[in-house]
Image (cartoon, rainbow, N blue to C red; front, top):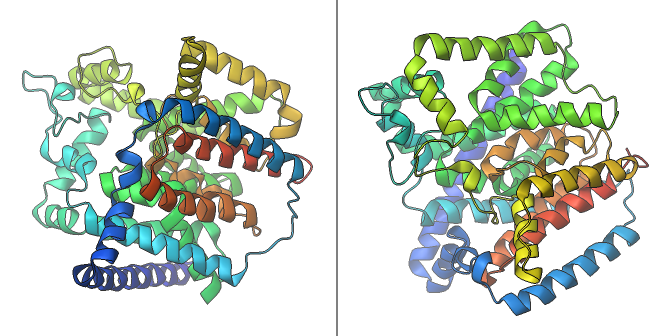
Length: 448
């Protein structure tokens, strides 16, 4: 076991070293070529996407594009001929890695100010000193973590050596840990092909690495740890330690607690009878213990945290009010805007969620399976940042990852780069929906 961990750590370090060399080489190339510099800038800053937002992008043309995409989606679903035993070709693997490294290095070279999410917790104290700490902002951002978790981050961040390492090297630490934990998640034979596959997935999967490095949000690392712990919890039902760890991780970020609560609800509502978690009582006890610790040692701050969580304070940063976008899919917000733009109807978002649940229930025999149930909360969750999605790496645990690799890595990276140059409007959200719905269809009960 220890030898396996050391081997994975070595490979992760080697991967980061190779990425560092590639990034430096690309930097030199950009300094000597205006064309290379222009390409890097457009990809690294998602220029075409952020300069042409979905809310004001050619509304009449947008309607035609939406209609065309729906037709294409219908045709693809009807004609899809996914074979269970398809394997990844070397050309596809290399192409995906190239796309991933270009996106990664372009991100590093063009986004000079990075890590604002993590630095917030390093520079603002969580302790009440006459001012509600959850209303104190840095660069327009306010805290979303519980005071207990926030204080741990604050203390660690302000250790002199750790502080220097975090500020100077966090992008490489994040990427290295991502590769290392993904090796643990897949747990495949170590050979050149699997090394390239693993690195390619980490760099391309649904924009998680791009967004995680750009913001420094610790959700990127939490999702990785949660994915690994979740799999260990499923595979080792007698391990109470894994259940405790899972309870702690779920307690850190309310997003994950909400997501897994929905998974449990879907499993019961649709009577799928899939083992979502083991030792539920241990996990719940751990979660309530974390809540108790917050309340006992940070009573005033914890009350402010609850107000912040339910958005009943005056915080300038209200996560649940985030708008849908290329790196932030919010299904009900997308549907809301479609109806408002096309028909002038303003649907209540709660009603949209209820309608979505009814649609799930009606198509449950076609869409719900062991392979895809973990994706279903994507359609009803009120907040869907891509850096939080690293916990979906559990989808790659099985031996045959053909469809996951193509849809979530290769196809997404191609769309990512195309949109960087062209802009997209509502199409930037349609791309996600197309990928998710295709996946749900291709991994239905008949193929699972």
